[in-house]
Every structure is written in C-alpha cells, then in structure tokens.
Length: 369
Image (cartoon, rainbow, N blue to C red; front, side):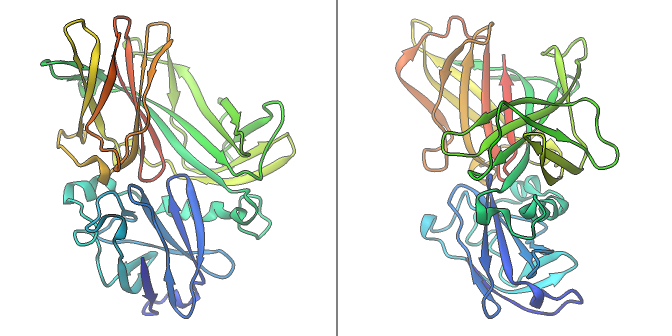
C-alpha cells in the first residue's frame, strides 16, 4: 500500500513524518520519506492509517467513503493485492485518498461499509497511546506498547438444531455485558497480580476493579477490568458489567509505575455481528458439524470477512465445564462451518460461546443457550 502526501489544507500534511499503522491488537510506525510511504497489511485483518508529526502528535487519519479503516478481508487479488492510494488530501482530521480502494481492490458492500463506520475519536485516542509512559519515545520501540480495547458479551438466544433454525432473542431482552482489556508488550511486567486501572480523568469510578490478569509466556500481559452491578431480574446472568465512559485512564503496575491511556468507548452496535449457530447431529445425537449465519442487528446477511478477523467457539455445560474449544476460523479457513471428524457427545451442552474480534480489535462473545 503506497501513496504521496499533498499539502492542500490549512492544517498541513507536509508536517507528517510518520504513519502509524493500527491493526488487530498491533501497531507499527513507518517513516514518510520525500512525501511518500509504503506500508503492509495482513489479509483477513483491517488497517487504520494515522498520520503523525515529528513529535508524534496526531494530524489525521485515512478516511474513504466515511470509513476510517481499510478492511482487508476480501481483496481483488488476494495476498498479492497492491493498493496505490495516489495523492492524499487533508480535510479537517480526515486524510482523503484520490484513489478510493473501497469497491475496487477492496471488495466490500455499502451495508458492510456502513456497519464498519466508527467515530474518528477512536483513532485519535490510539495515536495518543503510542507514548503511554510519557517519555517522548514511542512505546513500541522498547516493546512497552499498551493496547486498550473493549470486550462485549451478548446473550443472543437459542441455537439451531438440524432443521430447526436458531431463535434469536428479541430486542427487549438483548443484554450486553461490558469490560475493558489491556494488552501489554513484552517489555512490560508486574508481580503478584499488582495491576490496577483508574479513571476517567477528574471523575474516576469507585467501582472499577481488576477482573483478571495473566502474564504471557513470551513476555507482556493481558488484563481485564470491569464495573459490576446487579443484573435485571430477567437477565441471563446474575451480574451486570456496566460500560465505561470515554476518557483518560491510568494503568498502574506494581503500585508505582503509571501509564496514561486514552479510551474511546466505541458502541457495540458499530461492529456487532449476530453469529447464529446450527448444530447438526448424527442418529446418535452427537454433533457432526456446526454451521453459522452472519447477520447485522437489522437482519441483513453479511460477508464475515469484511467485518471481523477470526471466530472461535466454546461449548460448556451447566457448571461451566468446558466441553469443546475450536481452533480459529479465519478468511483462510472460511467462516461457514466446523466439521467434527469424531462426533462429539453434547448431551450435557448448556451454552455455546462464539468469540470474534472486529476489525478495530474489540472482542465479542455471542452467547447461545
């Protein structure tokens, strides 16, 4: 992917010296040399391009047809696709390419474009987070980058079985639990679970707590935070996890190392996909395959590769004992079906969790019972 920048706006693109490429739980800095740059993206993901000046200050973000990312799930020439954005023009904070890849090199429908649209503040927040320890050096250069994202759990209804289709819950009983997760780079660690999150800003929550954390074997960590309250009487779970406001939060490691993070609370509706499963069984009632339909909340069918990056399925019984974990479905494997080479006993199956990551890096748990 390549382009030339052009100064035709009151806020000049000529000040841009770097392009920050954001993908799913990942970002990388590229230099702009003599007004040109070239970046790479992985098939089956999405990339957002953020333009920064020499002090890593936010200038703007690439935008085409009002979409502030490039979804790379369905490309005209697969992994060999090359996109030349041609000349870029800065309009307010939007960087508009003279060549529009949407509908050309990037195969995507208008419905899918509209479902992917999210506020530009999301990208401004991420751009600010490239120096979360405030030492004027991009965190990624020392593997101390922090990525903050949302996680949603949505109760969706009853799964389908053979010729009986799934029965989705009605909108009045559509419950969503919210949490915030943070991934830390390999240069960051803490001891004895000593990690906390506070905020936002001058009006911090008094009910924000650490839900869980894990140190990764190759360095870095993952941690989850939420706000807990009692759930409505007719909710499918006993505890409600409340949403967090947009704003500035402070992550503290080991009680004395602080990091400033901007959080943009993108609404779940922007990239919510209802993944509806149908179980197919043999004559013994054991599952032989699991098929999926992908719909927007308005019921329109979509191509999942244009909206999300991967899908993973879990089966559990009434006491939450895990019965099955799938490998990830991607644009390489296809998103339509999981086949069981050995039929699986599902006589105690109580819940199906279908996990997916959207193209912004947020994570969803679509729950069926």
